[in-house]
Length: 327
Image (cartoon, rainbow, N blue to C red; front, side, top):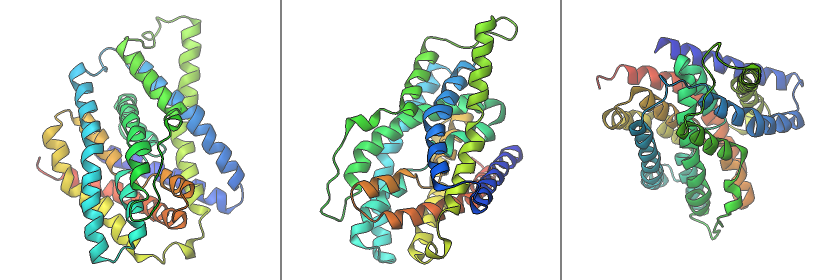
């Protein structure tokens, strides 16, 4: 556990470098936008494929583990919307959430930054099991996209007259494609040759994919830091309801639901992966979808900023507290 938390702290320090770089004007909005595209469309998909190819036969999970992951992923995106609905309704009455924001709150409750932050944090935090953790996360990412572009689009306008329209084209992305490719590679047992048993082509391919894929964790966290630096801080901290929401989402719910992860998922790595993904801050996609449907994207941006900032403390804290639970 101490190694995992150390790795997380290192990643958050990398995030701080991104913050400083933006403040020093080394990064600009244009640079961040292009670099973000580079990570999402090139380095992250390659990291996913490289992670699966790097699994040798001793590391490959059994079919029962994969089936458990599929079932857990499906259940998560069935159960969490129900939990989000009731939690947001309770918060609406207790802290007076505006009706037109309820759908956005529900969306932000369910969907975390499981890709852009989740992949690099898992790869770094799980050490020698990093590749396997990324493979698990890639499968979870498929269900994230399916849920986001169906339930997410339908729920975001709750409390308003806006009705989101499902676009099947949005399911197709480099990350989604690489996740399916990863599953296919696993299914057909394709992986890098054992050390010293490959040829020049496989050695070059392994080195290339490994080098490019390894760029993802530092670049992703640098970009998160730069994004935080691009927000006018004085405009962020004037919405106290976000503090309550983030506290419930990133402290209360994880503590309440952690026993379920441990009791029903016996594979310790799989349980850790799912729980760490659950701890991720609000997904950046919330701003994109809010913009698309002319909702309160400014409010969504504030919530993402505070949620991401809070995760610097919340993720290590939750991992430490749950490690003390006798389950």
